[in-house]
Length: 408
Image 1: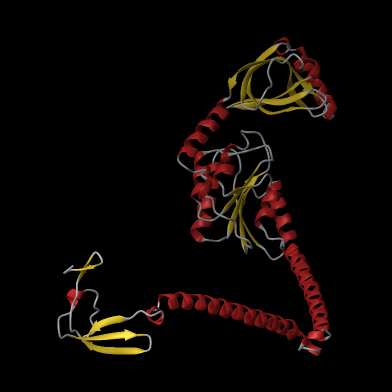
Image 2: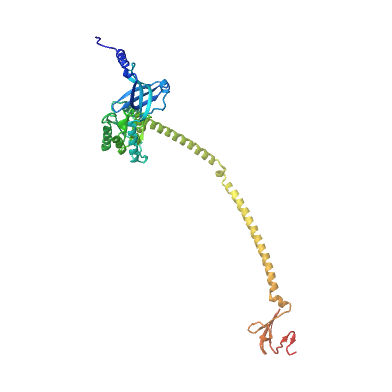
């Protein structure tokens, strides 16, 4: 018996065994699709899984053309094909000839149900999210100590700020107990206030590999954290419930470090640029001020300031002349109107009437005599004529009716 075999020999042997099993030549497998990818070549690669295991699958372009629906992660399907070994990688897989859709998978259903429940409670509300500190001194990292995620976070953080303090809380990121460890890590950092901000995450994977970040205990711990949390789970196309509950989501762990850790070199460059701009602005302002000072010192206003008053003096003279002319016109107009009024008054003056030969007779108490009935025999009368007064005594009173004496 041969003691040792080459890898190729073992793979060839297993391939022959599987190819020889008639039951595996046309088999139907029910499972939930995960990690489905359609390449530009038209070939489709995916995984079928259930609660107990996974099965790699491939569907070549010639078969994929007959698909009546677009497969998505989480779809429960029945795959028909043959089981064979891919010799190069030493793995067996289902070479799929036909896919029949049966509905959304159990994990995706659980994901959507829990998402709706927690959203209704307000765990994903935008107004509950905290702002990340601008320049944290200590960053808490919650992830696996052996994964690529922690290496990426450390590398990016040290590059951006060599003086940053990083505290790693090692946890399981998949499998049984992972959710409990993640929640405990968040509570530990909050209880002891060991960091200014937390990064929780891992690299990409299938939905079942990321499931610890979809479990209710993890999501509630993220939402209840008093310390700001950045969720960095999976790649750009992978969203977990932790992403919705966290204060900010990063597509990758590297991006999380870029969001959290201040870029010291960038700050230095910014300060240097601002310093240079300030110098340039100061020099420009000094040049402009010097130019204005030179222009002002050479201006005629300083050498002959009286010129500043020439125009105002001329305007004053013009205004004075216009005022005098206006006053003269006003006085002339008033004098003319006064003369007209005086002439009118002169015509109405009793003196003018007297000058024409008329007289005015009054009693000695200056009551006007307008009728014979106003006087009595022996009454003293005062008659005013143009050039004086005549004092007389009534000797006789003759009354006329219609131009005739009463006794006529």
